[in-house]
Amino acid sequence: MSTSTPKPMYGLTAVPATPNTLLTNKRPTQPPSPTSVQQTPIPNTPLAQRINSYAHHHLPEETYNHSLRVYHYGQAIKAYRFPASQFPEWHFDDETYFLACVLHDIGTTRENLRATRLSFEFYGGLLALRVLQDVNATHSHSHAHSHAGVNAGADSDEDKVEIRTGTGIGVGASSVGGPAATTTATNANAAAPREQAESVAEAIIRHQDLCHVGKMTAVGQLLQLATIFDNTGAYADLVHADTIKDEIELKPWAHSTALGEEFEQKVLGNRLMEPYE
Image 1 (cartoon, rainbow, N blue to C red):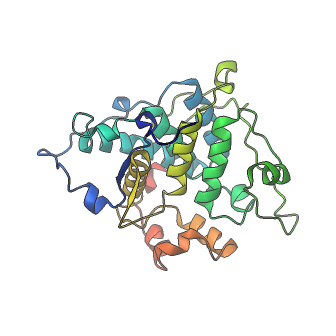
Image 2 (image 1 turned 45 degrees about the horizontal axis):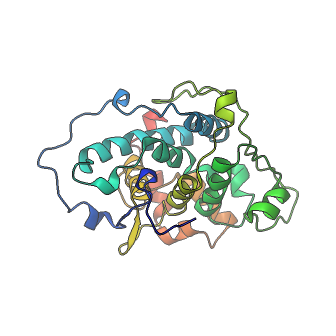
């Protein structure tokens, strides 16, 4: 398969990695208008519904709610700041962005933090790559290691956890803008094309990669912008403080440490979205 041609549908187009550069280009002449949740509906495709059910089942309620807010905020940002008429490289489909949003923190669950020595976003990206393409992806800890290369070894019974990536989960979404997402026969068989799955995995792996130089994918940049907005607007405030503390205690080498020693306290001080969690 040729990888030389970008796949704009899946957000695989290069944009500046730093918002300082990105947001100075073609600035809008008017402030944004209010955008309701009804204006940014969750995709009703079989794949989106399957992954929505999976995420709702596995993520803590607060993290799932955060993921849905990131989707709606990102759609509002994209419509206002990057209209397709002026920014054709931002004209990717809603489904790909939704998949990235609901899976971007999948590596932060208690089970997944303890399933690997990888930083949570790296493990989450690899896990998403597998879940998106394999509708039967239900593996034990050791099976995931042998087939996906995402387990760095277990040292105790506590570490020997099962990574449940199955999709036969009939649950309803219950948060902002979350439609009832039940796993039907059609949904359960919906798999992502390779390019789409890789775009989502790339976005997840880099969603804490706050660069000042270089490029990243358009869908990955939108995920960063919306995540940052939901967590206070400061560039470092990306995940909940309990997740940061837990991961750094388990993995002192984790990528989260690159965000600074004050990172945890900044997130603890965020009360912007507390009423909605």
